[in-house]
Image (cartoon, rainbow, N blue to C red; front, side, top):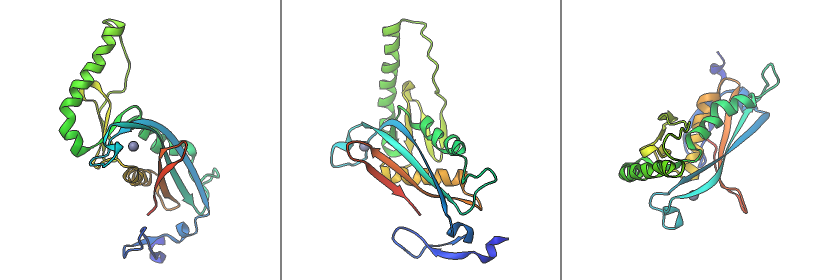
Length: 207
Ligand SMILES: [Zn+2]
C-alpha cells in the first residue's frame, strides 16, 4: 500500500502542531478545477453587534477547488457534473430561498417561525382561492449536519453553528471532501462569497 511511504506535512492556517499524513501523489498536485454555484438565501448572525443581527439576504457563491497530480482516464481531475451533482446542487437544494439559522437561535424562535409560515402559506389561498396546487420540495432532510425543515411550511436551513461565511466555508469543505477525496483527488479549499457586488466579501477554508 502507498501509505508506507507517506510523508508528514505540517498543516493548519496557524501552523500549529497538527500533523497529518499526505500522499506523495497529492503533494505534487498539478491540476486544479474550480466550480461554483450561486444561491439566494437569508441568515442572521447570533450576537452580531451591527446590522447582521437582522434577518437579511445575500446572493451567495459557494465555490470548491479540487486538485490532483494525475487525470482520470477521461482526462478529468473530477467531472464537473459530479462536482455539481454531489456537492453544489445539494447545497442549492438545502439553502435556496431559505432562511439559515444556527441551531440555538432556531430552537428559540421555531414557534414564531411556525406561526409566520402558516400566515405566509395561507396568503396563497387569499390571492388564488382554494384548490391551488403548488408542487414544492418540502421533505425534511440532512446534509453534512445541516437540516432542512419547514416550520409552518416556511423553508429553513438549520446549521449546528451560527452561519457566518467562515463557518459555511469549513462546512462546504467538509462536505466536498467527504464526497470527492480519494487516493488521487483532494479538495484543496472551499470559498463562500457573501456579497458579489460592488466588492466581493469572501471566506476561504483551506486545511
Ligand atoms: Zn449576511
